[in-house]
Length: 252
Image (cartoon, rainbow, N blue to C red; front, side, top):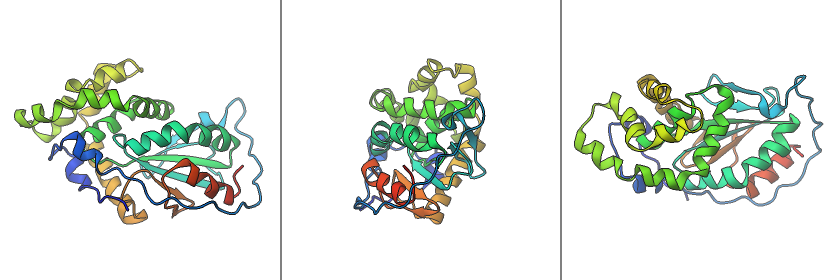
């Protein structure tokens, strides 16, 4: 059973600063599916000359970041929250296999769509988008790998910002500065002045909130992570449950 998420538009715009622990409560796993029957394998697709499919990253019209062959016969969408512990678990245990064993062969593409649940989540989603498209997945991996230490830095930020009563347009910049996120991303190639410019773009936060709302309406996304395989909600939340579904579709 998944926990119902908070109103994404209100949260993403910084109109409600919830305690970080409360935001984490919305991250829950789905029931896991059993092993699926295996279908005929798909032939690997050669990447462009001089490249690997895992190096091919583009921004999609739906606001996601897609890695791999844009014409792959198996199109996987991952809806994930950067403050979700189960999403971090998938990033650690599943993403390397998905990238190296499936996306690299050109038979599966992975589109990552940020599903924002609170102002902290929105701030990080704005920052992983602050560099080039090619840096998106590496920065996202870094956030998940360092999630525990990031949370420690963010713990005192909520009460401080509530006391400061800042306007919504300044919330994300303040979280980045006071929560140590600007320092974290500066160590990974996003300069502090560049981060400040990205966090000042309230239209980015609005788009993230709108896209999160659409995900619920379009794909029945009620928790994270959620995986969509060729347009259908897979109703699983772990690599062990997702991999058999990819194999059933022909991935090897």
